[in-house]
Every structure is written in structure tokens, then in C-alpha cells.
Length: 275
Image (cartoon, rainbow, N blue to C red):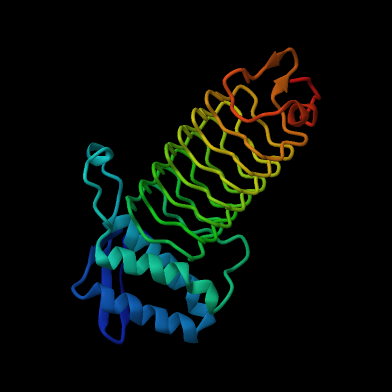
């Protein structure tokens, strides 16, 4: 939107919000208008991505991260209209595909306890967002960016998150039960008490991450990097660690307090070593 322009997005029910010199103001009954936009998107492929961008702007304006409330308790769910916008955005691909290389920009938004279950946010940018306690069960977030995001207690049961980025994210207690995380990057993240039971983690990167008390039971960890990671009380019962990296030159990860790694498993890591 050009600077200095005043524009209004109209639906059959009136304006969703107005912009004047980049100042966005939500209008009454915005939830009804959000769903009206979804009907337009269903019928008009050419308008679908524009509508998705309009709704992401609406979310950024109405749910920004408040640094003073990042650790506030109890966590509040998103406003009804913000959740409605997330839902409409997340199910857009059931109607028409996104433009090539398109990216939803939701960085630094407060989406604590939001419900994104089963929705599509591939390649979306959630950098620095607050997603504490959010529900992403079954969500499609392949290639999405969660760098420096707050994801404590977030749920990713059976989520599709291959190639997602979680650099320096706060993810204590997050649950990735049987999620697809091939090639995901968790570099330097706080994953204490996180659960990856049965997750598909081939080629993922946990270098420098704090994995204290994390659970990788029955996970597929082929070619995963744990270089310089904290594995105190980390559980690996029945996991597949073929080609996993615990050794960098002469410096190796301290496995003395890891739980469930057998001699046979360690012989299959790279470079091979005895238990």
C-alpha cells in the first residue's frame, strides 16, 4: 500500500478496516466481514492472496507482541476477530494455491493459545511471535520461520513442519508427538522438557540447543546434529540414531547423562564410537 494513500477494504457487509497513512483501524463487526472475505476468496483466485495479506496486516495491527506482557499469566486467547482471521488465512489453500514464493508475514504477533490446528501456514514468518500454548496439531508449517519465537507448551502433534526454522526459539515443554520435522533447524533453542516421541527428524539440527529432559523415544534421528547440545537426562529409548552427529573433531557431546542410548545405537552414529 503506498504511503500517504487512504484506502478502505469493502465487503458486502461494509469496510473491514480503514487505512490512512498506514494507520489501520478495525471496524465494528469485523468477524462477520472476515468471513465475507473468505467467501470472496473462494470465488476469486486472483483475489485470494490479496485477501490473505490484508488479514495478516489486520492481525499484526490488532495482536502485536507486548514486551511488558510476554510472561503475563494467565495467558489470554486471541480476540475472536483475530482468531477468525487466522482461521480464514489457514484454510485458504483448500480453495486455491498460493503464488510461488509467497510468504505470510506474522512476525512479532501475540498469538498465545491460538488455534491453528489443521491449518496451512507453509513458509509463514512467525519470527519473534508469541505462540505460547498455541495449538498447531496437524498444522502445515513446512518451511515456516519461528526464529526467536515463544513456543512454550505449544502443541505440534502430527504437524507437518519439515524444513521449518526454530533458531533461538523458547520451546520449553513443546510437544512434537509424531510430527514430521525432516530438516528442521532448532539451532541454539531452549527445548527443555520438550517431547519428540515418534517424530520424524531426519537431517534436523539441534546444535547448541538445551535438550535437558527432552524426550526422543522412538524418534527417527538419522543424520541429526547434536553438536554442543545439552543432553542431560535426555531420553532416546528405541530411537533410530543412524548417522547422528554427537562428535565434532575432538570435542564430543557429553552423553554420560543421556538416557536410553545403547552401545549398538552409538556404533551407528557418525563418526562411529563405542558406548
